[in-house]
Each structure stands twice: as structure tokens, then as C-alpha cells.
Amino acid sequence: METKKNISYLAFRDFFSPLGCFSTHQVKIWDEQFDRNNFVRWEKQGKLIRLRQGYYTFPSYKGNGDAPYYFANKIYAPSYVSLQAALSFYGMIPEGVVQITSVTSRKTASFHNPFGEYIYQSVKPQLMFGYSIEKSNLPNTWSMLLASPEKALLDFLYLNPQYKSETDMQELRLDIDFMQEELNVTRLDEYLYRFRSKVLDTRVARLKGVYI
Image 1: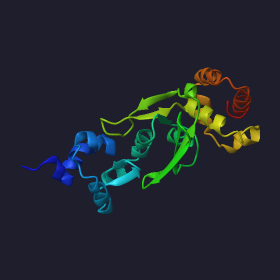
Image 2: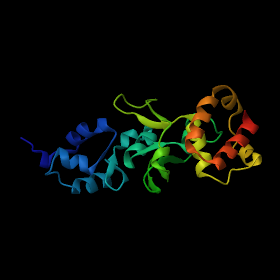
Image 3: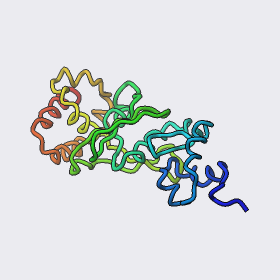
Image 4: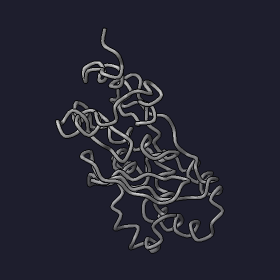
């Protein structure tokens, strides 16, 4: 009978594939005798994709457009997808994004892997709010933490102080229909109050002057 120590790739994949991505720590908990050389060998064989040091996924997930968002939460936690990535997800900006941008209470970080470039910008722990669990086209056991449109806008303006004039706001090219019909202005104002930033208050007022 095959032991876990000599487990086949297929058996390993069947166990960990439903997770979407996994850490070497999870594998160690699953089997303390697991040969870590398998990670290197299977990655070279194209059977695993390394997302960052200590985190892996399977090549079959490259076809899922929302998988990179899910991985973003997992490989650097706590974090949630926000900023340009969230604005693009909601169709609020015209261009797609190559970077998966997130907000975290940890230090600023970045990672690059076959799913894209992952950027994490740091905020105070008290600003880690305004996101929800989203399923989209992810498998049933997966979910992603995604900023609401209102919080994504505020995070963007807060972390990109170069956007301060009405001209700067126009250059964002936000979708005017979304801004006037779908954006929850009451929620925007409630979230803005929690930032307690007069500078951000001014930027948001200029944003409203252009789009709302």
C-alpha cells in the first residue's frame, strides 16, 4: 500500500486542487513526511505553479479569469483586492489591468508569477473595511475579498495623492454611467468619514464635482 511519503502527484493533486492554492505549511500539516523536493520537481515538470515562496497552485486554473483575485487574498493575508483591480472588475475604468492591486494592514509588498503581478499597499488596520466576500465565476469552495466600488475609489485616492485637481479626476476616465447610477454616494460619504482625512475630503469633493 502506498504511503503518503511516496504519494503520487495525482493523489496529491486530487487532495489539494479543491483549495485552489495552498501553502507548504498546509502540506506539512497534511503529511509531516512529505518530501519537499516534490515541489521543485513538479514545478519543473509544469505540474505546479509557484505563486510566491511557499505558495503553489495548479496549471489548470490559468483559464479561470477570477482565480488571480482569489490567489491575491491567499498569498498575502490579511488583504483584499481594491484600487485599480477592483475598479476594473466593476467596469469603472475603461482599461483592463495587468496588476492585481490589493490593500493590506501588513507592510507594502509585491510578487510576480504566471498569473500576473501582485501589488499590496499598506494602510492602517482601522482602514481595513469596506470589502465583502464575492463568488463570481470561482469554484463553489472559493471566494474572494473584494472592495466595494466606493471603498476602492477611496483607497485609490488615499494611496495616490497625485490625483488632487479636477483635471486629475477627469484623467481617471471613470465610467460616468456607473458613477451617476450605480455608485452609492451615501456609502461613499460614510466610508469617507471613517478615514478622518481632510485632504481626502477635498479630493473626493473634486471627484464628485467632475462625475456626480
